[in-house]
Image 1 (cartoon, one colour):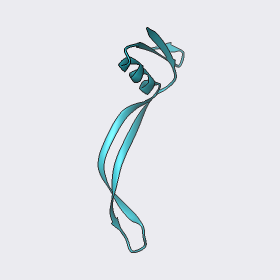
Image 2: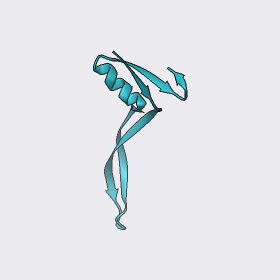
Image 3: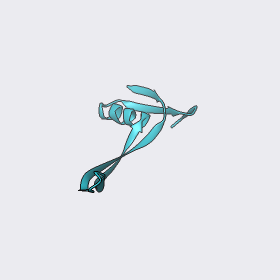
Image 4: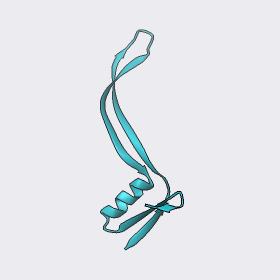
Length: 65
């Protein structure tokens, strides 16, 4: 089965932080402990459709990809 998906493909970036230190003024500083980049928007939908065994067809800006 083919499924047409109309939308924008975006990149999601997730950053995992831990509190490194809290100053006497109560302002925390953070330490980056991880970073992950994944597909978002219509790209995420297409990825899940493909995992279910269908064939996604992305349509973006009037052009098929």
